[in-house]
Length: 222
Image (tube, rainbow, N blue to C red):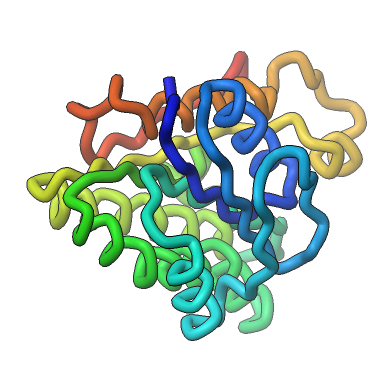
């Protein structure tokens, strides 16, 4: 599905990022991993340690990467919060920095390269829960809904220039942290990282060349 393509995966040291890298490699892609921590599985691809909120560092990193075919924006994070009226600036800023600032910084560096090539695919990660506001998740759902609106806006700007931009909207992803946070949950209903990775790789493939600005729910059995 991704034979002879190069995919850049942000958040490549995380659970989902590693799953996307592994799945993409199985589909024939060369993989480049970006993350703020130097904890890459080197068997999955070439790792670059970079602060994704630092525009100069990200620009330099993408200059080193050169041409690529697919950008999987996996970097992001989640924290529950208090009520909206009790949410402190620190939590609000943290949710937007990790979910929105990282995305905008990477797009600023990556999209010009894709435009110069005249082809490429971008896959972002929204959240199914962010289709509406949820109690005690105001900062997170606001940040992820911003990711979704930026996905749609960017798609409208570049779809006529050979670039596909879409997003997946997972429900609960089966990760060690989520299991630790919700020990009594039924994990069998959650989305396996490998299953979500398959959808991401499809959206990055030529098979999805007619798909633009889609927000694709990936909700398992939830």
